[in-house]
Length: 408
Image 1: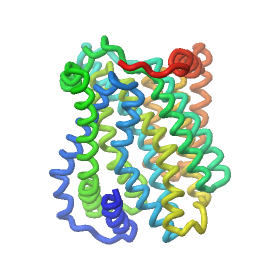
Image 2: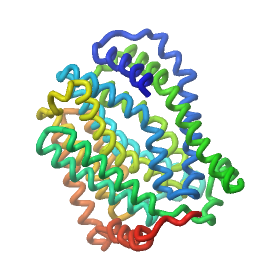
Image 3: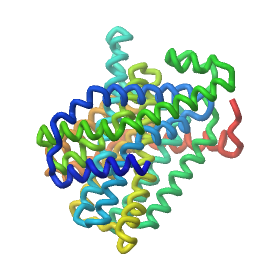
Image 4: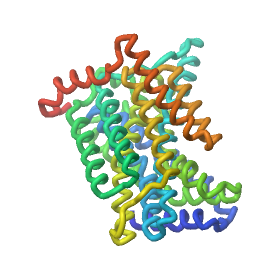
């Protein structure tokens, strides 16, 4: 990992300093892009088959870790540089807020759009009006709101400290503990699987487990090895096209580091029946980044700066954080009734696109996000399902959390 971080560090420093990259470097995308594509599909197959060995949520949590390794590496590099030069702290905020807003603002809507497109093709033009979540997905939905609420406190105090790291890490550990209590999927659902996961599940029990573990490892290794040259080729292309440093750090770098994740999610979304799983893939990564990704930042920053000071946010950085909080809160309010409607996907996408194209509308978009959150709760309240996720979560808890997960 040290070698990967060092490689990322070299490239990000060049981006921050504004040095030019050779245009020829972009040519390596001809092999790095297909490699990332291959690695993404391999771990997607592993997660799809893995939900019959462990809970679907646990399989997606493992998937999220493997897929976001590049994002962790990039954020670690930026935090390390900020520890040496406090003037670069704004890049720390830019990267993790940009990454989170991309996940929710682009990733969630695209899950619906892909599912709707393929549903229309397969079912003679019938429109897909909503994606209905499964009961066990209440764990992810409920777990999402807790770090979001904690971040209101971080926003208020305008600092990020080791204490925050400990609390956020504990929240993630609790989330993993909950997922571990959910049993694997029933065998009856195997017929809905893709060809390769179905073949894996037909193997004897020992070979099945080894195959799933092997695919997770293989996909993770591919992404690990290709992440640096893939990032390097895209960096060279971005510099050649004249993309600014801040835009690269906030949008391009997170998009590239999240690319494997989006590929896996879209692969499931196009099969429609797995659209809820695809959406939870994104939500699991949201939780991952709100907790352990941010928790890593003060640790790396402290190691770099000699533990002399904590990270302090200025007004601009606070505004970026509040915008990100408001967007994720809106996403949670849309999912709290365990249904993701077409108009909610459109709303999230339009608001994300607006703040992406017109950054000066940051404060206005933040307010609109909060208003949309309240509106979503009121609409759900009129339908009698305002807090469905919490009531379903209680049922799931009574059913599974008071006993050990059963082996499948």
